[in-house]
Image 1: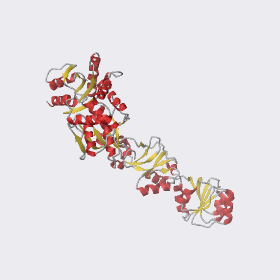
Image 2: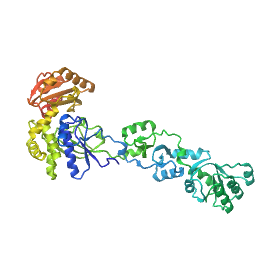
Image 3: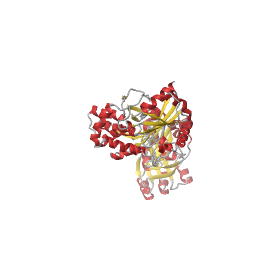
Image 4: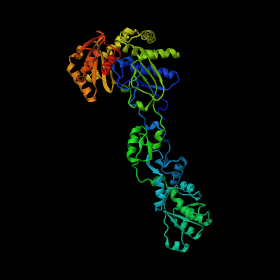
Amino acid sequence: MENEDKIFIFGHKKPDTDAVTSAISLSYLKNKLGMNTEPRVLGELNKETKYALKYFGVNIPEYLNDVKLQLKDIDYHKDFVLKETESIYDGYQYMLKEGLTGIPIATDKRKFVGLITMKDLIRSFISDTDNKLETNYDNLIKVLDGESITKFDDEIKANVLVASYKSTNFINNVKLKDDTALIVGDRHSIIEYAVNSGIKLIVITGGSEIHDEHIEIAKKNHVNIIRTKYDSFHTAKLISLANYIKTMIRSYNTTNFDQNEYIDTVLSVNEKLRHTNYPVVDKDGTCLGLLRITDLNSKHPKKVMLTDHNEKLQTVDGIDEAEILEIVDHHNLGSITTMQPINFRNMAVGSSNTIIYIMYKENGVEIPKNIAGMMLSGILSDTLILKSPTTTDYDRKAVKELSKIAGVNYEDYGMEMLKAGTSLEGMSIDDVLFNDYKLYNVKDINFAVGQFFTMNFDDIKKDLDKYLDVINKTATENNYGLVCLYITDIIKNGSYILYSNNGQNIVDLAYGKEMHEADFIEGCVSRKKNVIPLIMDALDN
């Protein structure tokens, strides 16, 4: 199964540098410890993060759209498919052996062509009066448990006829053609008539003898002959089962699902159709097997590890359908819950990468230069080059060692990295708002807080009304109780606050005074420490 043992590691939506680099550094650590992990991102990277990855030669992780259950995560009946040239009898036996009531039919190259069910077989046995035979010689030998007397054609396409009445009447009144398949016992005069007529096939029943001279005529006229131990009655019933199973397909529009289809979509379709069996295909139409609706109980959720967040609103879509193995975070406890105990590493430090650095030390894993650069970038970003009030001695110690391994002066590198992230060149107002944007929930009230670092607030202030229009529109369209954008001035060590009109009361309560758009808040540089606790307290009151 694709990615069956793969563990995806990712940070939050609207990823910042700490979220992306912590996923990369944790994935490297886990792989060194024998796991099979892969870092992913949940959104477009900002300029600061791209700068860090490019500086240390690290590839941008692939995008992860969701972790919802798909058909490929289910134990459906893989490779349960029959070639269209197999016999109806084979299809029946195959379904009987596997205890299933349907089977997908495909070409020799596994391209899906239709579905045959046990109901189709029963309906055919009871009501089918067609005497057509379309199969191959080998199918006939197998189904009739036959013995090959002569063989000239691989493909047998004929009209079946049973020699069931008096020989003289048969010879005088029945016109045999080259597309006739004749079922006959030890009636040598009819056999002689048949080989002389050059028909397509003779099936001799009851293990009866055939004269040598008749065999010679058959060879001359290219007549296929098979002998079976079954009597004529049973042979007549069995021969139709030798037909290609594709001859039973009445429709080529059978509902089928791509292996990447979401399970909730499958269930929605099944609510209307109420079928038992559905073929599973890939994007090229290759048949992969059969899904029984009951197979949906046998699932293998995607395995994930979360970094730099533990809030449901901030994480990947479909998280409830995934298996969370571990969380590494430095934020307050959020709303994500699990069905079983997990490893949850949470510390009051400035960056998730600081925790991961400690984990490297605990496990005795050597840190290569590029991974040291990733962890260093995450810590410097989240602590504003160790100037944020969230900075701890753990962060300082990690930066000291990581900067040596990475071969950089952390202050010079950190300033260049932050400068790269503060440039407004090529950015729209939406880009600024959603650059580093997180969702939260308190008492069923959703609110959003964006943060953007700058060295010149005037570049934003000149378009203040436009920013407020976008912020208000975002709050209205998403029914958020508050949308804030904190413009953090790295030089002045504080933030300018912009907020939606509907959140005026919340903002006033958070800061204990009447607030105004673009007010400067001294020392407010950490969303985690200087912003979110105040808003949550205001919503709690």
